[in-house]
Amino acid sequence: MPDDLKVVDITDLAKKLNAIAQTGLTYARDVFDRERYEALQQMAVELIGSRFDIDAKTWNHVSEIGYATPKTDVRAFILREGKVLMVREADDGLWSLPGGWADVGDTPSIAVSREVKEETGLSVKVTKLLGVWDRNLHGHPPYPWHVYKLIFLCEEIGGSLALSHESTDIGFFDINELPDLSLTRIVPEQIKVSMDIATSDRPTWFD
Image 1 (cartoon, rainbow, N blue to C red):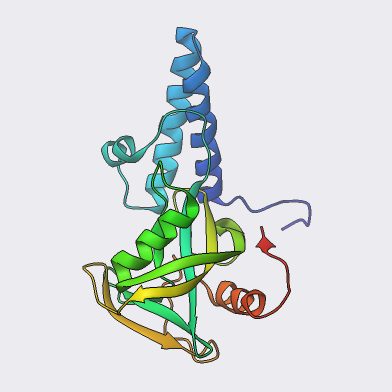
Image 2: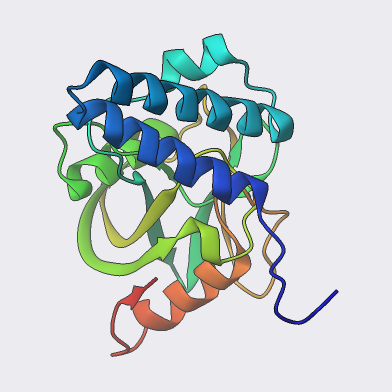
């Protein structure tokens, strides 16, 4: 293959096409323009469907309106005696930092505190933003949506460890002896960089 030919990432292309169509449908007033954007959105659905088990009906149920922006995932970095708290996810049996999607109306700190309480039983105080990670850039498996991951340093202030319907196990781990990770949620680089920032004067990671 010639050096000047770039391999196209179908998932990335589909996400960009859908974002263009979503934004276009938000602002277009001409009926013919809307038809063009709807056709473009259908192409994005078909491309996404070629990589994921998502049909048009499901896509329409989860798709958004308005100007297209990345989704926000929040994760908590909680240390106890130098080890980081992790939860085993019920849906894939693999491990991640506590967290999940930020809900509309929540501040990021409220969102991550709520997720920690729901998944682990602990009450926490957010003390520092450790990183803002673009999910596309750090080795996560392909995903239909563009996601920014916010990782916060959190301090325990109460509660006790308890399982939830979202987690099947909880534990503190040495970052050099991590369990099998749920790579769709977290990758080793993010944990190691977060530990470095949490225990030094290194500035917040971004991108």
